[in-house]
Amino acid sequence: MSGSSTHRPDGRPRVVVTGVGAVTPAGPDAATTLEAILAGRPSAVPITTWDTEGHPVRFAAEITSFDPAPTIEPRDARRIDRVSQFGIVAAQEALTHAGLAGDGADPDGIDRSRVAVVIGSGVGGILTLEDQIEVRVTKGVNRVGPLLIPMMMSNATAGLVALRHGFHGSAFSVATACASGVDSIGHAADMIRAGRADVVVAGGSEASITPTAMAAFARMGALSTRNDDPASASRPFDRARDGFVMGEGAGIVVLESAEHAARRGATVLGELAGYGSTCDAHHITAPDPDGAGAIASMQQALADAGLAPSGIGHVNAHGTSTPLNDAAESAAMVKVFGRHGPPVTSTKGVTGHLVGATGAVEAIVGLLCARAGTVPPVANLSDPDVDPGVDLVRDTSRAIAVGPVLSNSFGFGGHNASLVLVPTDG
Image 1 (cartoon, rainbow, N blue to C red):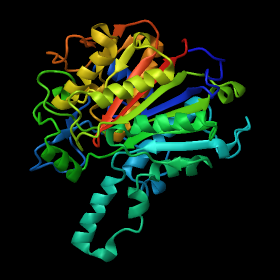
Image 2: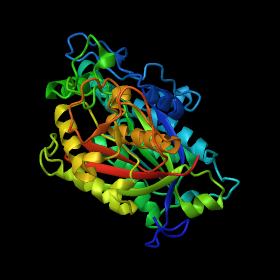
Image 3: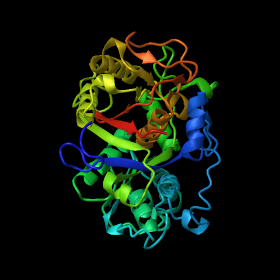
């Protein structure tokens, strides 16, 4: 990738990552999450937050010890859905990591009118919605809470992060199901390249381990039913896979123009060099079996980054542990990379599927692993069921040369999104 240190060959600003934050079933922050993923340590457990009697699926990758304090005051937390609590906490970590967590006017003179927030979610505040429907049915319409709408709306997390930190640039949510996190980061990069923002707080948040959501996904046949062995239930690319494991959490990155980051002396983790986004236009839930949309998404991201497929050091696959997705993605990767492609992992064997947050968390993990020159193993992979040309990482982490990572996310609605992240040294 030629060009100046701060601008691309086409003259647009380079976009760099200066902070990351995560709240996941594998850990309360990005570092702990990464540690669990590198160890291949699954996080699925029996559901504890509601009574699962009579439900066909009684386990999930649940965040069992989440405490929003001290980031969110208890009085405020009661007025914020769990999905936004996750996003606020992850954003606080990312902004602190980036050196941008101060309130009011920053000593470095950051222009808060040039800081935007883009945080996606597949379903938004569904926990609050379910609770208030029950209130209406059992207690009457006059007992429905006045905060239902601001707590359930998908844009609440972005708005609350902007409110908390006084960011006056655009603040909105992207909803492309399981691709929401990646599309949010991609749109954030496009805003910086277009000169509409200097800094964007971007990612995804989800909290959909609720009775109705779990029942609905189970009725679709999308979820694993290994109630007696939750830890082994999420099995990306494994022949014994029987569906995905619902997860929850948030992943947030801080993106900046390279010029802005250099001006304030920020530590740069890497460059967000490429973004691709397509739609299968094939089926509302099933992927195109030939992987045409996924192929196009990856190729777009590579072209945007100015890289040939051989320039990718490893791939963090969507890898949901569902037969249709894994087969389509496997075929797509062979089409893009050939039969001697880069090492491939899926982190969902550890974290489960975080729906709208999953792509953002995986982009963070992918970048941190690319910086460290290591690829996590696919947890619970004992009998690979992929094209032989896909080089899945098994059993233990694999050391590789430091280099770019491609991270995929695909979602209901036929959405496909891919990112290319290029790490800095160290």
